[in-house]
Image (cartoon, rainbow, N blue to C red; front, side):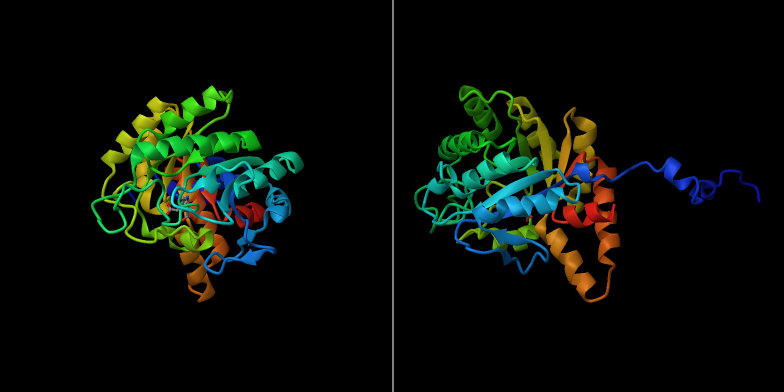
Length: 326
Ligand code: PBG
């Protein structure tokens, strides 16, 4: 043998943990919670095994199940009792997320993040106020600036209910700055914003849209969410959000976009979050159901890979299961 460098020397059981570069901890994970104002009992979400839509009265039980595993943070999504053109239930004081967060804040120690968007609250399922005629003309879409004003109200109403962090997910230009100003104006200067900074127009959101009843009634989201073909553009999106005051930068989805996670980690001095989305979760479950993959192993490897790419925190439907196993 004429070589001396043998990487295998560091792969014995004794030394592997010493040289391990990445570690997964329950405190890196955020678990999504779906609160449904139309439900009077907990209802399983078929495409996301292990997840449920829970009535507001049951959200504390649901959150306690999560914190019992060692996961300390949740992100709350709401399914409102009714929808309309402009999504007014998204900023109602007695809206589904506002009611849920009030309980979570009063009765649990969980760190409560809220998703601030309109798509679950609008009758057309788009993430904002539509331009006139958008239903029939595919060139028309969400009115960016009219939507900002609504997102400000959503964010402030979440803050008033007791949210610990606001996560705007609508991909409107200027949304982080608008929300930052609105929160500051209402006295919430210390409430952080986690921006869905680079959110792609991805087909991996399918199961979530069933779960949260948020699929667009017509068209798609390509006019506001990012083109999966683009990575340099992610840097531009993230730079704008940093300028506007984002505290945490999220990339979404996670696994198909690890190049973007790694790039944002290197290029910006802010914590990086990755959203391991519903489709990433559902496909591993589907394969495991067929006996083709070992669920626990692929779930853990997925999350480890997302951290290795540079994520500081991960929003994932695997949070409880992986935390339990750790
Ligand atoms: C709302 C929102 C979506 C997701 C999180 N927030 C749906 C969408 O943009 O269509 C998707 C999450 C997932 O698939 O797990 N804008």
